[in-house]
Image (cartoon, rainbow over all chains, first blue to last red; front, side, top):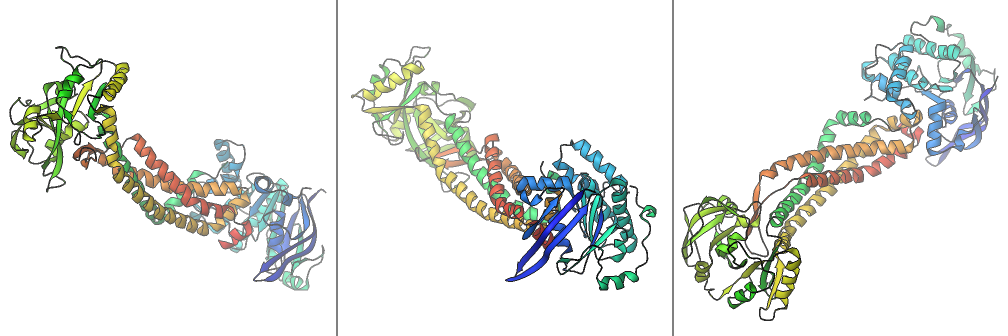
Length: 253
Length: 387
């Protein structure tokens, strides 16, 4: 299987109040195309930092990350912005929809950077919103939507440019259990039916069950594949199995 | 492709109060500027509309105004005999000796009295002007009769058709109202040359002599001929230039208006900067999100700059609208040349409005550039966390 992401000795340090904080330390990671990887770990373990480095939203202190064989950190300015638009669809924990734009306008926003005509942009965004089950909420503003609906709009926005990756940072962190299931089912369907490579940061052991693989981070160090810290083994024992993504009521993909 | 304008418009609507407060400052700055420009524009129009292109005003050598000039009566014949002087239909040379003085009358703006130009003139002088009688009749030779310009009639309560006003050695009856288009002639009182010369004890001289050349080429030759004639000891300038130079009378008010507008603009520029910095801080997470979606730093800068310019242009348009009614306002200003009041109408024309709008755009750009740059330079992760 082709490699989608290759991280080599990837490290990230922050300086906070004259103290050096190591967020990631010598992380080696390979993610295959079509993978649905869950990144787990306690708060401050470096999960989100790793996601930000893959999306080239932040720069590593040392090491290298190749995405589809290319080092995005070698790009700058407009080229780097364009790279993000083409390759990355990012889903935030708190949805990050633009409050003054409707669901349709939010989803069409990344298409402003493409060569599609205004009409095509709207048609495309409408189609994607319908696919996530929000065809009847096109002209609703974020404040008029439930949390689950907002996250579905955010996912529609993330996939509207047909990116290679969907990077989701705690996508169910602000949702109730039912909405969380819908979102996870949606992500699983995107992975399964559309072969999207997904990297999902989560605390939620229940969410992990939707992923194909899971890796653990602790204090900036990535545990080897297949190795699960004891703390997480204990917790996973108490988690019941997830509902099948196929049966998730909102998944239309 | 840029971030859609609807994003900026709606954000301005969401922050209604802040938008209105910021706009108010810019609106007033633009209004003051446009009003000042409208004043000078109106004044310039009055002076530009005064004078015939083929006419020269002969003044004493070194004299810059009719009021301070003196041309002896024996010069009149010399001027009439000059080559290139135009002749009217009756064969009379278009040469008009005129006597200029000032009368003081209470005006609507200044009840204690304002100076008005009094011009002693012969029928040939009237013939040489584009002026018509709108009411009453012309003054008669040898009578203490006068006609007044329409602006005098409008701005001086005691100056009404049929009434008498006092200047010189006694009362003068107003027998007619004149209309000189939109020219300075509307701010003058005209009477018989000899009668006025007698009142002011100036029987042996005129203040100026107005002469008309036959054509534009001759005009220049005539001008030099008068200047070079040692018998005259006089200078000649075109009538148009003489009045155009009086536009300088509006300069102090123009300077004051622009000074106040700029001072206010500095304040409102800072207010815009403050508002935009607040917007950037409040929308930090949105900035991070937009960058994550693929919008470049330049797109973010352009978007926030556009928003700042939108506020300013909106305010500028309101500022221009605020002063539009000035178009119907007539006022008066003291001329430094004639030492009398020149009435004029404020003129808010497309050029003045364009100046106001450009001024507001500049304010928007200057007020918004630093916050927009700060927005563009935010690190994505820091921006997402700030929100």
